[in-house]
Structures are given as C-alpha cells and as structure tokens.
Image (cartoon, rainbow, N blue to C red; front, side, top):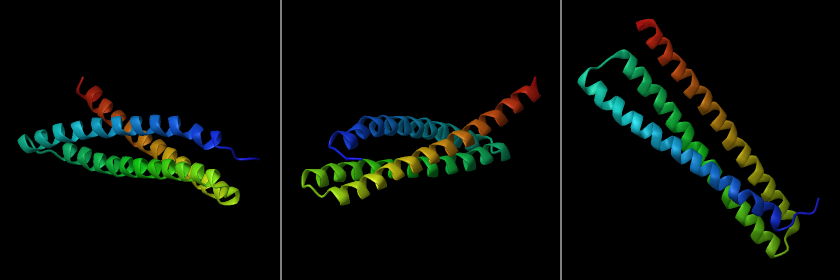
Amino acid sequence: MVLTMSIPALLFPAISLTMLAYNARYLAIAALIRQLHSEYLTTPSKNTGLQIKNLRKRLWLIRNMQAIAIISFLTSVVTMFLLYVEKMELANIIFGISLFALMISLFLSFIEVQISTKALSIRLDKIEENN
C-alpha cells in the first residue's frame, strides 16, 4: 500500500470528534463528582464513597484515553511531515503507531463505557429496591 498525505489526514476529523466525546465525558463526570462530594459532606455513606471510588477509576481511564488520542493525533501529523520530506518507510512506521494508539484509546473508551454502564445498573437496582 502506498501511503499518501490524504490517508493520515483522514484521521484528523475522527480523532478530533473522539477528543470532543472524551471531553464531554470528563465534564459530565467532573460535575457528578462535585455533586457527590457535597452529598458526601452533608451525609456520608458507604454507597457515595463507593461511587466516588468508581468515578476515580473512570477519570483515570478518560485521562489516559485523551492522552493516547493526542499521541495518535501527533503521530498522524508527524506522518504527514515525514511524507512531505519523502521519508516513506519511517512515515509508514509512525502511521502504524498512530493507528495503534487510536485503537488503544478506543479500547480504553470501551472499558470506561462498561464501568459506567455497570455503575448505572447498580444505581437503578437500588432505585427498584426502594419502590
């Protein structure tokens, strides 16, 4: 396969949209943490403490998802530069790294969604128990 300038450029919108989605997740979790923190200060409970612990894990995942997506973006730009200076072999290697980084970021996103879904399911179970 011949790597051209347009191939790594195709990753730009995908990575940018991914970063927007990750940022939206981060902001939602940050708001929830603030809410739970004030709830915990007024009426400390084990359940709230467990939720905060769960959110800490999710924040760690989101931070790493974002960092690896940025690495993917940077290596995609480096690939384009290498293509510009006609270093084709190195450009292919760096582009492979870019794709691999994007895959890792998406995999971490998958894990974070699983944790989020499990947390919501537990919360719904507690609501159903009270009804």
